[in-house]
Length: 464
Image 1 (cartoon, rainbow, N blue to C red):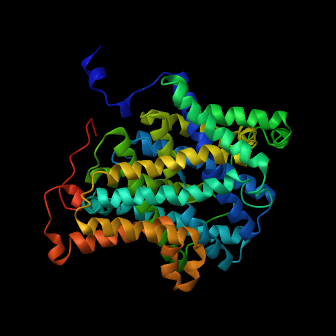
Image 2 (image 1 turned 120 degrees about the horizontal axis):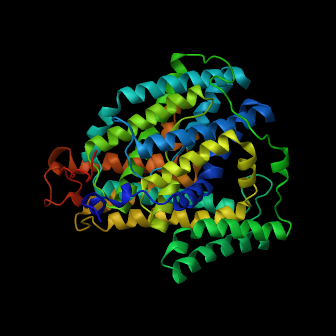
């Protein structure tokens, strides 16, 4: 074995093509519905777009998600954090995009204004990405652990809703059939982890989704009729809906979204670095944000939406223990193919919501587990740390369970209270600043970074 191979970090390991394809496809299935389908549907419905236009949006989202994931995981120059992080459409952008598009007249006219704001914000993010790297010292374990715990707790209700049949007319929490599909899928994943410590355990989620969908097909609870209806090839070119419109107001609104997604991306970077045992340094956050900015701008050109590191897939990295960033690159290639060949995408849409929800329960809970693991490094003898964790998780759960609370505050504050993840993260970051960086709180109880202190994080290993 060569020295280079012996010293290669698992993140940089280039697996055989077959494994890359299987592991990458598993990430795509885990991401597919929430990361590329739901948001285009919500935006298209709110702006009054046709079904044909919705198909364009979904194809564009898949294509751009693939490009963005490759940029983030593989990287080039000073772009991309080069960790196993998959890029998905940011949920935080939904309400602002609908508001911007509706104010501009709805339909394709509204979309053109949305895309104008997205392109400008992507360019701005790329240009100022180096500034985001300066915030690394404000993310000690007490903050990152709190944020990741909140992310997991905020995502679990989404998984539960999906397990109960999904949003809309399919939602039926009292359905024995939905319960059986969801718990059966979850039980299969747990069983695979118990009986196999090798290859099968790393594709447990994929097997559960395939078997669950197969059972549903046999019982007549799903079908593949949409496969026959879908086009063989469907590539949406740049500016499919016309030239973008640029306006100051929408750009300002969208910049709020970018700040929110920056927090989510930073949390995801810290989470996956903990899982793969690589420490984060200042330049890594800057690289991640440049990739985000580039992806957002490209998304606007290719008729898609703002992107962020998808925390849902962080849970899958933890669950499977497959750390290679090239798996995410493979997932990116698969998503691009799905965007170009709609028939392939139509096959995946046949996965029943309860089956996907059962798998999501395991993956999203794993995000919480990572947060708890990080919080285990925190000195809770210092009451300030206890208060940071308690208040941030409390606020995060409050906003998650009562989303209409945003209606009680001005619109600018509603952008923060529109998401439990954002509200909890802002609380954790703010309280850490107040307790550990301002006034007498700046004096540390001890030298451990778990106290929320300013001890620099060591550089990542490997060539950067």
